[in-house]
Structures are given as C-alpha cells and as structure tokens.
Amino acid sequence: METPVFDFHTHAGRWGNISVSDEIDNYVSILDAAGVDRTNLNCIFHGDAFRGNDRVARFVETYPDRFVGVAFATPHYPEEAIPELERAFDVLGLKSLKVYPNYYQKPIDDPGYSPIFEWCDSRNITIMSHSSAGSGDNDFTEPRRFVPLAHRYSNINWVLAHSGNSRIGQKQAIEAAQASANIYLETCTSFGDHNTITDLVNGAGEDRVLFGSDMPLMDARNQVGRIVNADISNDAKRKVLGLNAIKLLGLE
Image (cartoon, rainbow, N blue to C red):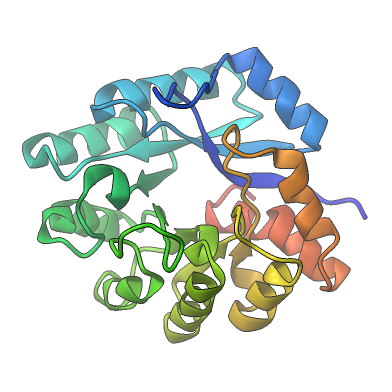
C-alpha cells in the first residue's frame, strides 16, 4: 500500500523535565526511519510565542519539503496574541495553530481565548488542541467542551489531539465529531488499545481522522503501525495516514 504519510502532531523545542532534543537533521532521520514524508511541527515549550514560532520557521526554512509550520499563541498575553498570529501566518508562513490549555492552565472555553479564536475564525485557520478526559488530567480539554466552540467558530476546523487520550475520552471525542462536522480526531495516544483506530474511523468517519505521533515524545514508528494494522480498509488507511491532512491544510 503506497500513500503519502503526513504526521499531524510533532514537537520542536526542549521540554525541561523530558530529554527532548530538537536537532533538525536528527528529526529528519527519525521521519525517514518511520516512513513519514512530511510533518506538522509545533513548538509550545517556549514561554513566549515569538521564540516558539521562530523555532518552527527555522525547521520549515531548512527542510520545506518535510516540515509544515504550526503557530503557537497564548491567552496569557492578549495584547501580543493577534500581532504575533499575524506575524506567524503572514510573515513566517505557518499554516495552522496549536493551543495547549493544560500548559496555560486555562480551560479551552475560557474567555481569554476569544480574541485568538475570533481571529482564526475570520481567516479559516485550523486549530489543534490537546484533548483529554479520564486519563488523570484536569477537565480543561474534555472533548465535550469543543462542541459549543465548533458551533460558535464554524470557520475553524478543530483537531482534537489524542482524541480524548483514554477510552472515556475517545468516546467523548467520537460524540463531539458526530455533533460537529468541523471537528477532526488525531490518533496519537499512550492509552489506546488495539481497537482505538477502528473505533475512531467507524465513529467519526474515515475523512475526519488524522494520523499523529506526538514525536519526539512518542515513537513515530509505533504510531504508524497502529494505523497500518488497524481493522479498516486500505482506502481509509491512506486517508488517515496522510490524504486527510493534506486536504485539510490545503497542501494538494
């Protein structure tokens, strides 16, 4: 089965309590070893968005055929958020946005995000957010919270990273995708069982599930294997592994 493989969820930057190296050439070697053609790269580990977005832009500039840039914005500095988003998308050429409410300690539906979401809605920007329920996290990103946001900001395509991150969370994520046509589910998790990918595809539809690895925090090879070995059709595997992401980000 030949198909482009697009990893929707990878990180640059160094995280203090985890030994994460982000040497650019090393990343490319890992992508090659996992059979990943291209990746959606974010950098949320810097305290300010400016440095994180510049780091991502350096990856993209060095290997534009392997990395697609994901912007970072924080609700903690509202006066800086919109100018930085404009710089990230209009100057640096980044293609989507990542938010991580657990990192900010603000739930996804906190009013502090409103200027960010309004700007993204006006530009039809895709937003990926951490999502989790029943896995020991707080409830800041329970998938059910995204449904009102998806209805309010209907020009945004919302990608739920980890698809809820547990069996409880996955059930919520599937229900959220069924309730909102602009909610997509991303596959990487350390809590999934052998049926996770099949359940996501059967529940949300093969057009709205996206392969992601969380590299380098997880091994991309294992995460690819979960898709390849899932009990879904080869056409669905092609969509999940890359075709859906390419279409969503307008990279066709």
